[in-house]
Every structure is written in structure tokens, then in C-alpha cells.
Amino acid sequence: MTTSEERKINGVAGSAPREASRADQLLSSELPAVARAHIRLARKTFEPGMVDRGLRIAQKWVGASWIDACTRNLRRIHGFDRVGAFDPAKSYVCVANHRSFFDLYVVTAYLVKHGLLPHRLLFPVRSTFFYESAAGMVVNGAMSFFAMYPPLFRERRLAHLNVASLDEIGRLLSGPGVFVGLHPEGTRGKDDDPYALLPARSGVGRIIHQSGATVIPVFINGLGNGLAKQVAGNFTGKGEPINVVFGAPVDFGDLRDRPASPRVFKQVSESSLEAVRRLGEEERALRANAT
Picture: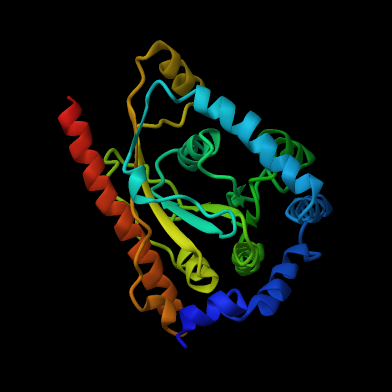
């Protein structure tokens, strides 16, 4: 029996209890009380029941609706037939390039609004503001319906907690009905070339390797970082076209069967980013042919 087959039977690489234990480190006393309260609340919403069901409904009819309305006049979808239907009993990882604050929100809003994705959404977010203030908790709950979870930490003294955050994502992916959006680059590309991707970071590879979740690559181009300008361009029709190119699930070969190590995590992340890069070349051709 291969390691991949064992994952299907035993969960996240047979290590879900260990990951759950490490994920509990997110409640470290090193964090402000408001951050610990926010983490407890966000975790609670992922437990099966009325709250989880209610947030899924809100993500579709409120969150996805306004994002869809504010981008659909510019948005063009390509290649979705390569993805196939999403299984509600499985969990997925979506890997995408990172140029705008809004990349993954636009991708998932299309999927949710059009009834293609019944899953609970999850986007790891920097802890600054969202997990270090009461206002951040309100914004996360009222605007994303607790999709912005778990927190990632920039402060050096808290950097060791990022491993706990990665394991928390793996813990949630080991269950059914979760869709996690991740950027292998780790941060936004800020130069003038949208096709020049930053080097892949190993954190995404760790999540993918340990979770065994199906990985869907996406390349998106055309979004800006100014919300008001982006929305205005959609309604005037003068904004830049937004191309969203979906690819088939990533084939990692035997990488997922190899023992966990930083090197393997890096290779998995690089493989996922390479799939995104190839979609970028497709998007480049689509954009050129449209002019």
C-alpha cells in the first residue's frame, strides 16, 4: 500500500492527532487575548452544525454575490472544464499567482456564486489587524464570514507559530468540505511583469504533502489593488479585463509518497507553482489574441 493510499484511509498522512496537537499551539499565551479569542471563535465555526451551515449560506449569498457583481463585467473564465465537479465529501487546495489583494476572492466568488463550490472557504491571512484587534475580528466575521483563517505571523518572536498555522490548515483539510486558497509565492509580486512569478515557498508544499488534498491551479491577471478603482472600472466597462485560467488538478508524481522533509515540501510547492506558471502562458496568449 502506498503512502497516498494510506492517507485516504488514515487521514492526513496518518498524523492528524499530531497536527491537531501542534495546531493547539495557536492558542499560545504569547498572543494577545483578542487574538486567542478570535482563533477560538473561528475554530468553533468549522465544527459541523448550524453555524457552519449558516456561514456557508452567507458566503454564497452575501460574500460571493457582491464580489461577483463587482467583477463580472470584466471577468473572463477559461479552462474550467479541466477541473471537473467538486466533490462535497472531499477537500481541495487552490493554488494561484499573487498580484492583487483580491486574487483568490475573485476566483472563489465565481465558483461559489455559480453553485460550483459548496465548500467552506478558507484563506490564511496575516495576523496584523485581523487578529490583533477587535475590529479585525468584526471585519473577518461580517465580511468574509470567518474565511480569513488561520493567522500567519510576521513578527520574529511569533514566527515559530506559523508551523502551528500550517498544521491547522492541514487539520481542516483532513475533513470534508473545505476549500483552501493559497499562494505558493507567499507574497505579492510587485514588479511590472505579471508573468514573472516569485520563488515558491515551502509552506504551501507542507500543507499539500501532509493533507493529500486535490490541488487546483489557477492563474489570474487583470486585477488591481485599489478597491474603488477596481469596482468603478467594472461598472463603467473601462477596467482592464480579468482573465481567470483554471488548470487540471496538479500531478505531483511520486512526490507525495516521499517522506516528509523541507526539501520535499519545497519541491511540492515548486511543482504547484510551475502548474500556475504554465497557465500564465495560456493567459498571455489569450490576452494577446483579444487585442
